Length: 157
Image (tube, rainbow, N blue to C red; front, side):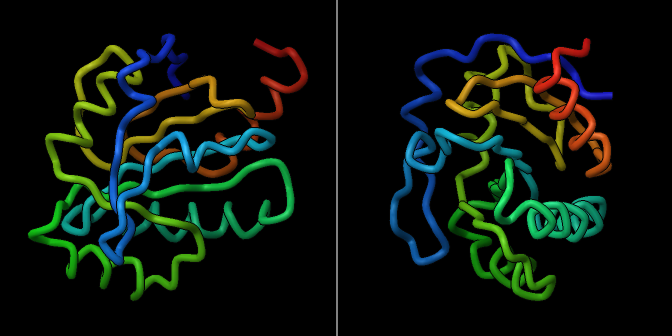
């Protein structure tokens, strides 16, 4: 279900987004050294993202003190920051979200994966220490993410 990732380029490590207060945030600053990171790239105008956002919020809550965390990256940009903020507020999302300009987010995705961005939602899964392990466009059930991480940790293919 989850696509195997390629080695990310070093250019992606310098990707800078902003938080919803407008402060710049470097992607490397949010990569946990000791936990898996599930990144969901989303847009407030994406109907599938609405359902996925809630499911990923539940995943994040289940593992709040565990082995993974979830991070959202909105590609809605500064012009739609209010709509993106309202999208996460309405869903009472408990995980961090960043905001990026559409071109910056798609460039980040391409730098990370060596692939063209296909649409929202899109998921990137990083192992502890920041190695990209999986990429998937479209909806991904949290159970599939948990199974993938379990398999990675226990040496299953």
